[in-house]
Image (cartoon, rainbow, N blue to C red):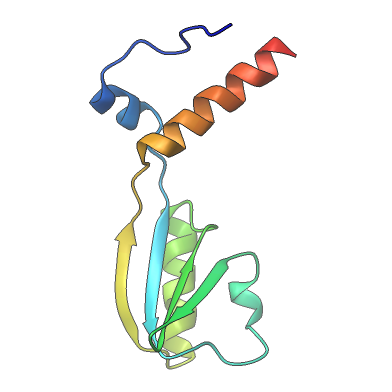
Length: 102
């Protein structure tokens, strides 16, 4: 049986589940082996660009990473804040609902 786990507008749900999460795009690739400062991050290489994300959840971590990029001479292409999608909210809600039921 189904049940309602949230009764908010789409905009409210997205705002409620918004987290500080960032994605950094670089020109080229990271040196091998992957530097210690990038451990724990999702690293994706596509079209001669590298994207780092997944573990950048606050401003302090973001600034530390940007410092390492500068020190290592890596070319910064973009930094963007990642907003939650409705799928992210759904997983968050149903995951919480599942643990409450158990």
